[in-house]
Length: 313
Image (cartoon, rainbow, N blue to C red):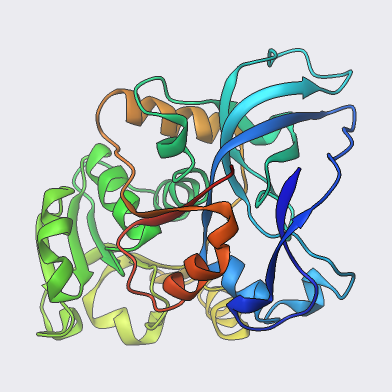
């Protein structure tokens, strides 16, 4: 089969389109023939060596966490997924190995794919939708009427976060560039603040949840626009964000960091939102798997609207 691998850390050009062997299955895994995977900012950071203490130096490395496709084999302990079944999910490994024709993944990390969209479209959802869901529901305790601000609302996580927040009945303020204002309104944002024209932090709005997808704000800079018991949620794991979460643990205004995990019940929730028409994947580009380097170069510009997909041959 074919897969994208890197034999050293570096720029997008280090990604190689290699011929590799089929992965071997463990008892709790399924083998999925991939219809689509996607490029996440995390993939670009791993490729550049930013997480090398976790990703290691045992090359080649095969990136990619998102996937949608069909089950073609299963381990001996897997009974709840059938051969041929369309699934979507995300590997919980640091280096996910989904940039390939096939991937072996724990059965608990996938779920039946939404019936109302294609498998290619479903490949855009697992990481970003579970990130948004776990940030808003689990860390932000979103409820009907919550005031939610999403900073970085036009990217992969942001575009689904708008829709998930609206599905929970929240009032959503989206922060994005002026060129993406129409997209955010189309997705359901009640207010849009173009950050290149004005600053939401200069306003008087009181947010129950400030979801910093872009990663350029902090609990301290957002305190003036947080409600008295508001929550600041970051997607960026760093010493600064970890310290902020620790020192505000018992404060009324709290900082949290979302560390996404793939869970079947969360994927089922996402599939349900899709099938109800409350969540639609936003796809910027679809490229062949062999053009992963081009996809990485585009994603790291931080100008993608929604997701960039890779399609195996």
